[in-house]
Length: 305
Image (cartoon, rainbow, N blue to C red; front, top):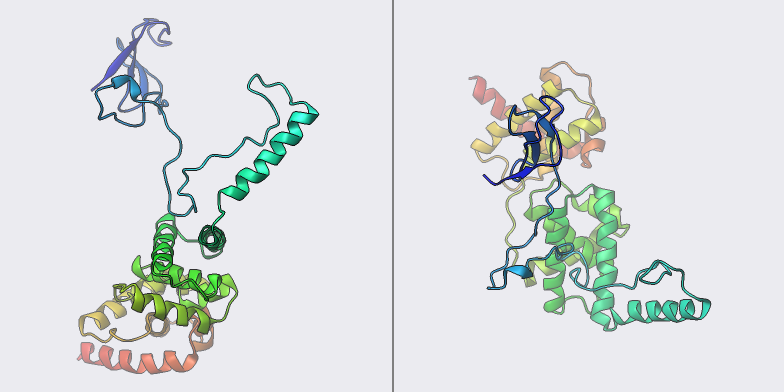
């Protein structure tokens, strides 16, 4: 454990000046009585280790690189504040020159058509992140898939919105995030058919391996939208786990079978919810719920026997 003795400050408890900083826990405490002065101190040391022989080269750095930025976050910009290095405002002549330099600097960062395409696509992806409440991991995965599609030249002649939506849906499937094709299509405001066509293309050309969708992950979302109780959610999860054991879930729409399990859980717990309300919350039809309920009822009858 690395401790640093701080001699200037006195302990408010015992009055001694033997203050110690613990670099691992981020605490400042008294070395005599153990009184903790403050917690979660900022680390002012180097952020990166230096693997060269020059130990003085370990300097603090900026933000890390990210696939969600068209330039990976490695470019620089001219400061928008019209002040010089000493903090004094620029003259009128110099201000107009700096404005012109800013304009050309922003233009030259994406001079190729592929760079402009990527910048527009990633801007749309950033908007979808907020609309669909997605995590950074999903967005990074979607940006990675889109860059792979650009390498395969799948973007040429196709809609940027459609291909970006397809990459985002593929990222949701890959990370097992419960977002349907309709959710993504509505979020980017294009037809579901266009997103599905682009998704089939990238799935085939990029040879993506997608895990089987787990209907249990959609239970909480449907239940919260329909206003169902925690008891119903637990019962629905139990029903789906039984269905997974016997292989009934394979090949079925995960949202449809999750909605059917919730409907049967409502019946068993005497909660008055119609098939219409649950179908609207799940984004499936009432016919789908009835068809899935038939199979789940047969399974529950056999379990009781």
